[in-house]
Amino acid sequence: MIKNRVDVVTMGCSKNLVDSELLMRQLIANGYTLEHDPDTPKGEIAVINTCGFIGDAKEESINMILSFADAKKERGLKKLYVMGCLSERYREELQKEIPEVDKFYGKFDWRGLISDLGKSYNKELEFDRILSTPPHYAFLKISEGCDRTCSYCSIPLITGKYKSRPVEDIEDEVRRLVASGVKEFQFIAQDLTYYGLDLYKTMKLPELVERISDIKGVDWIRLHYAYPAHFPTDLLRVMRERENVCNYLDIALQHISDRMLKIMRRNISKQQTIDLIQRFREEVPGIHLRTTMMVGHPGETEADFNELIDFVKDARFERLGAFPYSHEEDTYNDKNYSDDVPADIKQERMNILMETQEGIALSINESKVGKTMKVIIDRDDPDYYVGRTEFDSPEVDGEVLISKEKKLNTGDFYDVRIDSAYPFDLIGTVV
Image (cartoon, rainbow, N blue to C red; front, side, top):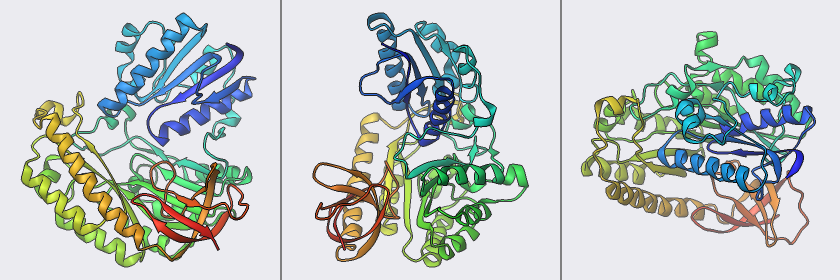
């Protein structure tokens, strides 16, 4: 094991990734070397930032902790620390079950890890990060917590009430990141649309996006994790007017039948959802919508599921992900419903939904063949340069594979002619 090296492993979402990046900056400031998500852990200290959202993610986090616990016995790992959502929610149980972990921290008290290493937390570097992404893009977390009361979701139990970051703090962070070479910003939060209500008593997301788009050097802004109920529609004007605000919106709808939306406590109806999507596409021509759907929620009938499939076929979302319902302790469902859809039915519905979406995605991608699109280059692979359009968010969306006829620079923008299409990727040539 390498002395004074820390291996940091991040599980789960990009919001966790930001926390890991903040921790890594503090570790570097205190003289440590580090590796993020190493293929082969070699440090004498390891930190695992866990996810606690759904069953599969929790299991993955626990397995990762156990693998590092074995490393303490077999490979000389001296210290093992665990932080994040799983640790926030199940700290007492984890302490009993995995005593090899030196200390568990939650979602918000991870700064204590620095002092437990015998080092000092540097307040001046509070918002500085060591990016784990390519240097030209970064995730920008604008809030913590969630005030929604969806039936199935444990996140409010983990993260607490919604807490917006001050606009000025976000602007300062963006300026620092731009100075370091970042060109593209993925706005993230548990719920973007609620931003500002707690702090300013009004929805401030449209103003925040405008102010960040005014900062010189911000080439692309992309918006993730919006909530459909009470959507701040002035945001559409900002997307339409600001060239550096991508015509892309990630908005989780979860379902469409009025019956399921009510059971899920989504505070929106089927017709309101349809009207909202229509407004998006009318006010922002060419907008690409990413959404998430859930199958197998308690009470979902075959008729509800078929209604969802018909809706997906009609709406033709450019991007769609799905997951089967996972029963979570202490949620509204845990107190009021049983997990009554069999696992094999959930998986069957999931497969049908994603097969349906694959055909839609292929059709939409094929419509881009022959067009020239602005693309940012993420990496240089052996056979292709790999980039993305404004309609592709890193890690979750498709990519553009570009032939190596010309030398291209990672992090630069190029005009690319789309030559052919697959369901989730495009093939192109620099013009």
